Length: 449
Ligand SMILES: Cc1cc2nc3c(=O)[nH]c(=O)nc-3n(C[C@H](O)[C@H](O)[C@H](O)COP(=O)(O)OP(=O)(O)OC[C@H]3O[C@@H](n4cnc5c(N)ncnc54)[C@H](O)[C@@H]3O)c2cc1C
Image 1 (tube, rainbow, N blue to C red):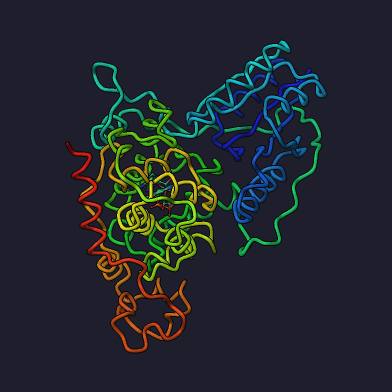
Image 2: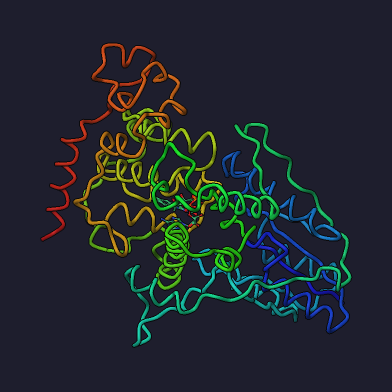
């Protein structure tokens, strides 16, 4: 008889609570352990960068296991049932998911396994504090970040789980790994080991100045751990256990808590993956997205606003975007181009290697002004001022926009003001920001009544 460990968004061996439970079960019952992963049904529709990031993460994980993994692709309920039958599995262990699709998926898998007499044990989460845990005194969920954070602090502090892979017998892996996409513009680096190194480098290099530098697009002032957290190559419990004190550490803890807050909000409001948290914004007038040339300009980084375009090009060439830049481009799409946030969120989902359903949907809704704890809708980011403030010398813009490399200094944020600013193929602005700001506020007035 065999125990199957179903890897989901927890691609690590250490500090993996569910894996520790599976190993303990196998050891106590003297059963062998198999590790499995099912590539998603929509795998082929992912961007090359996301495909390669997933393959690289799974491949690294497979190498770190004593006998590799059972690999399949398609519907998880069908594929896991087949794996269980083939390997005489009696129990499947996995980390519990709390996002909309993850919850549906685990319910379907549980049902399929149940009919075959196999139990699905869901253990732990990808969060320091499981979504649904932090509540008000009356038991209701929190809608605002700061009180959530204060209560969340009371629940953290668990020690990481140690997992002894050698204490059980492993079943040899089977199935083929998809081939890396040749169209990917970068070589993705990802593994549990890489995540731990990234964390160590960040602590030595940037944590101390994190609170000052984290908003600067032109500096590498953040941890770049989002891919590892989204794929579960590192657990926030590990980060919090090693995080000391000091202003940088304090702010970093708060950022990890934003991730947990949004997971909690999505768990309590599963419809907000692609639905409005604040329903009155459904009634707002939006422009048609399909066939809209301004949307195409936004997607490809050709809006004529350098900070927006640098960010969008950073996304499609690296699979990652700076947090400040995410807010700037999100505000631009919703409030300058008047396109619904879901259009931008699904473009991000297609490209971001750190795609996380809760952080993405609620990061978008926060910026669009229709989310929880919202940045009010009337706060419209001015892309030129944001550029001057968070990329003062223009280095970020020049890095991603070759057509503007001839412009030195922060003048690069307003190329239309220079005689030769648009001489190398860079477009004029697709909209007049100040006019579109007024238009956005007028549309807000319409739904206020
Ligand atoms: C419109 C929009 C969409 C976003 N989509 C995603 C997404 O799909 N996946 C994702 O992981 N993050 C998303 N974020 C949040 C944030 O931009 C990224 O987590 C961050 O840029 C990742 O870089 P880092 O690891 O260097 O961050 P750091 O500054 O080093 O932060 C450390 C970790 O804290 C968490 N974190 C930091 N800021 C936030 C935040 N504002 N919201 C939630 N968690 C946060 C992340 O897990 C991050 O890795 C989005 C933000 C916006 C405004």
